[in-house]
Amino acid sequence: MALPRFSGLFARSGILRSQFALNPQLQRQSVRNLNLHEYQSKALMEKYNVRVQRWRLAKTPEEAEEQAKDLAAETTVVKAQVHAGGRGKGHFDNGFQGGVKLCKTPEEVKEISGKMLGHRLTTKQTGPNGVEVKSVMLAESIDFDRELYFAILLDRAAGGPVIVASPMGGMDIEAVAESNPEAIFKVPIDINKGPDDAKLTDLAKELGFSDSDTSKAVEQMKNLYELFIKSDALQVEINPLVQVPNGDVYCVDAKIGFDDNAVFRQKEIFDQRDTAEEDPREVEASKYNLNYIGMEGNIGCMVNGAGLAMSTMDIIKLHGGEPANFLDVGGGATTEQVKQAFKIVSSDKAVKAILVNIFGGIVKCDIIAQGIINAATELELDRPIVVRLAGTNQDQGYQLLKESGLNISTANDLEDAARKAVNSISK
Image (spheres, rainbow, N blue to C red):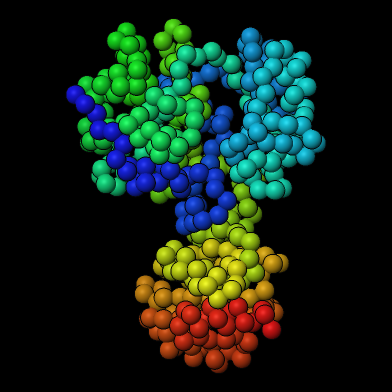
């Protein structure tokens, strides 16, 4: 049976420009996704009998040496544990190059770990200041014959999970999709029935597994699917999936994204969240169910609705301004949420003006207006505030702002609001 080949699935699913990728700004726009360290992902895969390299974790050079002795690998891979890709080509603040190194002895592991732990690693995904490395993972180096790509993700067009796989692993899958789309295969899965053994066998053969090794590949695919379903994942991406000389299949590197709506039944997973590597403002925003992404601009934004927030930022730029953040207060914002939103936005010293753009539907404009007044008064905001309200109780909202006696400008529409916000800081 012939398997479907690439036909635009990547563009629809977002795996090319994944919402789970650690892209610095708008790719994470309105979703707060849990990021696991590599060692945490490996522990989760082991729980579902997914084959991974033997590994250990260390937080000091001395512990790394002892763990390397216990691991007793012929060659040990030392990996800095940070929420960023490109570690191997990164550099540390002490001048040391590379966050992934091969070591032959426990003494060498100690030496290399000492150059990583406690130092800031900068990669193409961390930003210029880098991220402090607080732990290193030690993994057994394995020799392999082939590198493949394997992923399970939710696809709206397919109405459920889809397996995406390619014999061309260990490289940028986006580049493969563009240059060799025929080398990418997809297998839709009936979420009520689970993966079909016959289809997985066909996929394994398309990926180049021999008849004698097909069962090993199928077993790992089924285990990865079990992980995907039982952990409420939105994406499980293995790149590379490798085959070693004896035919066994290993998952060497994984990227796993989880459904935030399932936090109530995945407490063990979500408790592993490492907020130390996140923007403190984003962490604070999440406490109040606000979606905040810091950016490099000087006009703070507070909007309800991700699409409206994106439009607001676009119009600010159209009028020559630069948005300082993405901030979606959601459809049911309360006065307390509005106050906290203002507190977070105003904590950015680069913000010279704040633009509020609210479309009243579920949320009422007068509630937002009262929240703005409370925040401006309590926080003693000294920056220009421009407010545009539309929808439910907008007239009452504007009246509250007018009677507040505060220095708050109102706008007739979004374009007027953006123009006033930009002009307020260019005087």
